[in-house]
Length: 429
Image (cartoon, rainbow, N blue to C red; front, top):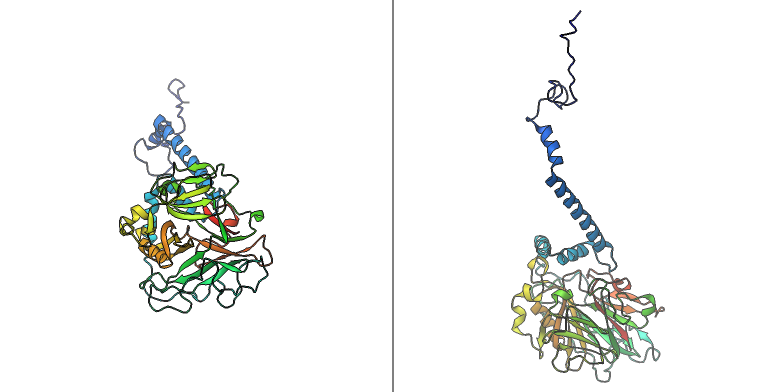
């Protein structure tokens, strides 16, 4: 029998290195670096590691909440535009710009448009007297309408691209009020290089129409705007004639936003291009604090954006200076992108222009070509530029929306759900 005095039992804890067969690795596995298991355990026990892990979890939770809110909050828009807006709002604009630069493709040179310019998205002019008095809505195909008091039918526009295509530069009536065309539209190729692209040009009669500024759910955001909201609800669509986009994000517009007593983006700035909305539905465009464009009890809203791009009927040389800095961070830093702008003629007609493959000068030149003596750029890039007109048909309280340009990104019914950016709604008087 073994001597009980010399017999010893050795207790070895599981995984204790003192156990030659319990190195913490499966039997037969090659040993790891000395103390590796112990180092991992010690790392988890370190206070700094625990703090870093907690901070990471908090950042991840905040990001998930913040981005989730941006993607699901009222205001509509595509996932990409919502994500880009979130990034720009959180000082990640350079990251967005880099991504746009990587994905940007220069506009195609040459070629022909993908749709007809002889009436796509617009009905032919209406002959006055063929509709019952007081009837409002889009005109039916007919011969050109006679001149209306104070506003003759706009003269055809020559094409910057050279020889015009069928229908190019010819005005067609989109909407009539009391048998008189209130909104005309036409199409032009923007220049002689990008001939497969088409800009939409609109001429609106402010004597037959009234203009309303609407806030966006995200920009300018919630506030007391005297009942004006970011959506054209079913009960607010009677007489709806047109809608179009606003300007840059207010923080980037170089000016302010005012609606029914509420200011956003700071005070209105002198010398900034402005759309001015009056309580009687009137509408003017010009430079704030000049030529009578000042605050008064009659002013319902003011939307400022950058500097004028047409002055006295001419395009100033400033449109070619510091394009990305002065006129917006374009996709990929390219000058030729989707742009929109608005102006006013000497006799008070309102001109709206938008479309792809345009530089600031191209946009300004088209506004001047259509008769604008003063004009301003609105928003840019495909997600933010749009113009819709509305066909009441047999449902005047719920008219059918139609995009002027069939290739615009935003769907025709964009403003029938909450919009994240401000916009303009146009109604028949």
